[in-house]
Image 1 (cartoon, helix red, strand yellow):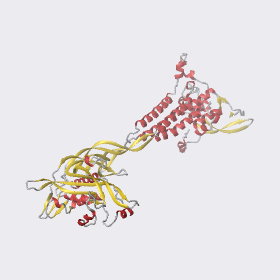
Image 2: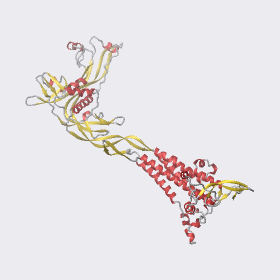
Image 3: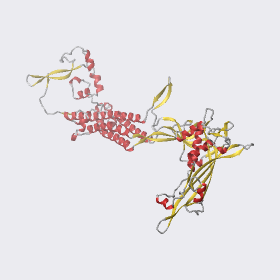
Image 4: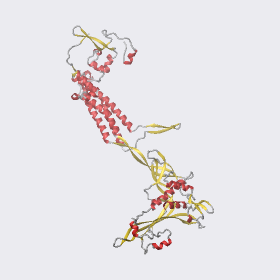
Length: 621
C-alpha cells in the first residue's frame, strides 16, 4: 500500500529543461550556437498556420476590393439538356469564397492558439509554480469563460484564448457584411433582328365611297386600320417581331413614316367689338353670312388636314399622295377701354397669330426607339417598342421617299380602298380643330367683362405632337402589315440590362482585417520561450502524467519524452482505473481510484472481456 502524506501545503512544481540533453550537438560535446539554439524546434507548423491566416485574410480583402462595382457572378451555368430538362452546374460565388476563407481562418487560428497555449503551459512548468497555477493556466487555455473572467490573473494564455475567440466570432460576419449587392445597369452593343413592313400597303387605311378622287378622301377605315387605331387610342403597347434584345435597347430602326417640311409665318391679331374693326369682318354685317350667330374671321386656334396629290401618271391619275397640315395658334392680351366712370366701352384682344404650314411626304424613315423586354418585377416579356419621346419628331432621318398609290387593288365602280386617305381621316378626328373668339351681337362688352370672361388666351404649338402621333400610327401600320414574307433587317442597338453589382463597404472589411491581425498579435506572445522546451510538447494526458511522474508510465528510457516517443515505450501496457488501498496514519486504510498497470502482481484482478467495453474505449486482458 502506498503512503499518503497528510501535509496540506500546496506543492510547488517545476520541470527540468532538457534542451541541451536532446540537442544532437550535445552528443558530440560541441557548443550550441545562439542562432541554432533559437532555431531548434521552432514551431514551424504554427508559424505556417498564422502565415496562411494572414494570406487568406489579405486575399479576401483583395477579392472584395477588386469586385467592387462589378456585375454579380452567376450562381450557375447551363451545361446541357437531358430529356427536355435543363442541366445547370453551380458556380462558386464571392460569398462562398468568403465563407470558405472564414472557415480556414477560424480553423488555422484554432490550431495555432492550441499550440501556443501548449507551449505557454509547459514553459510555466519550466519557470515553476503551484499546481493551482498550472490548473489555472490550463483552464484559461480551454475555456473562454475562464479566460474572460481571469481578472487580475490574466496572462498570455488567457489573452491568446480571447484573441482566437474574437477572430472566430467577428472576422467572418464582418467580412461577409462588407460585400453586398445593389441594382444597377450594364450597357453593351448587341445585334438585333426585326421584321417590320417598310411601307404602307396599297389600300390599307380607308375605303372611299363615290367617285374615286383624292378630294373625297376616305369615308371610313378598313378593318386592318381600324384595329391599328383602336390599339393607338387605347395605348396598347407595340409588340414587334424582334430578337436579340434582352433588357432595354435603344437605337434606330427603319419603318414607314412621314417627313415634314414646314414654313412658319406670323401676323398681328386684333379682335374688337367695334363695327369699325378694320382687321376682322364687321360683327353685325358678318351675321348675315354666318348661321352660327358668331362673327367669322376671328379664329384663334385651328388644325386642318388635307390630301395633296403630288405626281400624276400619263393619264393624269394621282400616283403619289402627300398630306397637308396647317396649324394656327395665337397669343392674346385683353385691353379694355373705359370711360370716366369706369364703364367698359370696348373690349380689344391683341396679339400674334402663328401659322405652321407643313407638307408631309411618305418615306422610309429611321425611328429612335426604345425596346423593353423586362417587366418591373424583372421577369421576361415579349419585346415592347416605343418611339423615344425625348427626340424631336422633325429630326427623324428619311432613308428613302416613297411613291404611294392613291388606291389599292379593291376598286369597283363607285368605291375603292385607299392607301393614305384613312390616315388623314384619323388625324382629322383626333386633332382637327377650329376655335373662334367672339361675343354675341346683342351682348355688350361691359356685360362680357362683368361675368368674368376674358380673351387673354395663350395657345401653344401642337405641331410636334401631331407629327409624333402621325409617325407612331404609321409605325403601328408597319408592324400590323408585317407577315412571313417581310424581310428581316439587322440593327446594332445599345442594350441596357438591370444587373446586380457588388458594393463593398470599406469599414467592414477593414474591421475584419484589423480583428484578424489583432487576434494574431494576441496569440503570438504565447509562443515565447519555445527554444527553452527542447522538444515537441502537447497537452496529451499521457505526456502530462509522465511529467508528473505517474508510476504507471515509468520506464527506464522514458526520460521526459514527448507523447509519441513515450507511447513507443509504454504504449502496450494494459491499465485500468481501479480502487487502490492506501495507508493513512496508523492502521487506517482508504481506497483511492487510480489507473494502474494490471501486469503488476499487486494490481487487482481484471474482469473478463466485455463486448461493450469496445464501445467505451475499453480493452481486455
